Amino acid sequence: GAVVSQHPSWVICKSGTSVKIECRSLDFQATTMFWYRQFPKQSLMLMATSNEGSKATYEQGVEKDKFLINHASLTLSTLTVTSAHPEDSSFYICSARPQDTDTQYFGPGTRLTVL
Amino acid sequence: QKEVEQNSGPLSVPEGAIASLNCTYSDRGSQSFFWYRQYSGKSPELIMFIYSNGDKEDGRFTAQLNKASQYVSLLIRDSQPSDSATYLCAVRSGGYNKLIFGAGTRLAVHP
Image 1 (cartoon, helix red, strand yellow):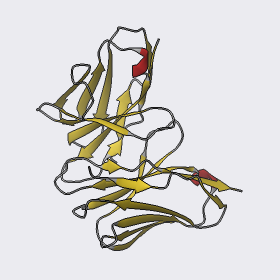
Image 2: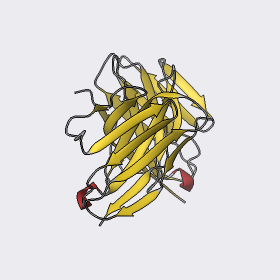
Image 3: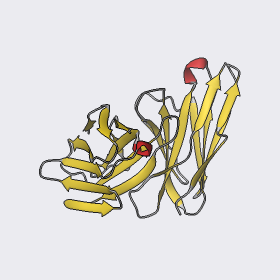
């Protein structure tokens, strides 16, 4: 149980385009999902907390207009990287938290390369 | 700022030995404590969680929590080369809706 999927697993795009990443909890409902970014050989960095039916809470320094988060249902959250640039190339990982627990389960991640 | 500290390593242990990974946290109000394992190029996977003082065992893994000392550890018995990974300690502080992650300790188990 507690499986989280992400799609796509990798994506290559041109500078200036937008990319949407989906995060799904497959066998549980998640009122809260989290989006992280990880650069090579660096630690996880929390970007935002996504709550179903409400606006996401962004961490300090994360541009909310650049990283659009939608959490439209209890099993789906999406992250859209708008006007992507090479410096946005990174490993984006979501996690989902089942209701009434503190435990986060991570998706497999999406590797974004912006040319 | 709530902090979680881990030694970055690498911690090198021989196959079959006990690996001991340590983590300290700054917020005394912390309630929940987690250990995740992350292989290179992969996302973190949950190993175990602990809420109460003392030890919690799951197979070859034992988590130890000491809230008075603000210290949580993970012991891996009979370490295997497949245990070589980065181990992340995460803490949920009181009142926070998120986990605070340490930077991770890299473990290398050599044959």
